[in-house]
Image (tube, rainbow, N blue to C red):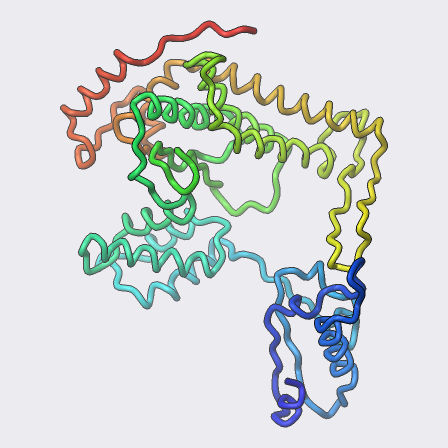
Length: 397
């Protein structure tokens, strides 16, 4: 590679995924005389031996700069580092315009429509946006439409962010009811938390690995979290399980909240061990161990900077944070039991609700989707749901 570069000088030599050969040398096991390390040594020698007149510029890319060997990053080798984050709102809009040149849009499409899509896709990378345009085009083709409309982008966005619909799963009415109340619990708690992200969509149609999905999206690009935002998210995560307890009783809660509990535990652990959001007894100290991997050249054994005394305090603080979030979700759902029934009832009829439709429901307005379920049929379903809804089960304090 370097021989060809010298013959072609002046030139630019670009190495993609440099971490494949540029990882930290001196692995803790297996010795260091492997092919990868020899390749890295050759690169280091070549980069260090260039004459000033050779006019060869070397550019490399990686998404794992933390694992690179320090010798690669010293002055004289890769001495300039350019960080490329995911695009912001303006960047997403410009990227969408590039990819939309290759697809046929609705004749009435405007720049405001493109900005709307950019606003609904926070955190997406350029590749994600390219995939979004491709999925929208595929959906338009499936419905035999010659141009792409906003509905195609909405379907594509839901598929990418929530997973592919799995309508072939046969669910009983009781299963649907349980999923509906679970997702309604997530949504209702989130709506009653001031700093929670706005509700985007809620569905009881199985998507990906989930039997139902409640999705909230931030109003703008997010670069960090406040303590209250994390606490609101924790309460929302426990809303699903607490809704099950409220409606079906302690003995009939399901394993559906397993992933919610895992997420909540991870958030609470990060709050205490990483972000200094624990109590005064812990102070503003980082209690997390350094998770170093053996093949990066670090020791096999894990070092820890926390004593047994403080490890117990950390565990206690994590339990306090999660217990308060669980109690907060329980309190909201008991006080808003009527709203919970409204959302779950509408989910059982229409299967999918947008954030705007949920807001209408909670404001006492009726929603109608005749293109999905005719109004007269929807009313019959609601009556049947009201007759079969399990009454409030007394819970143990």
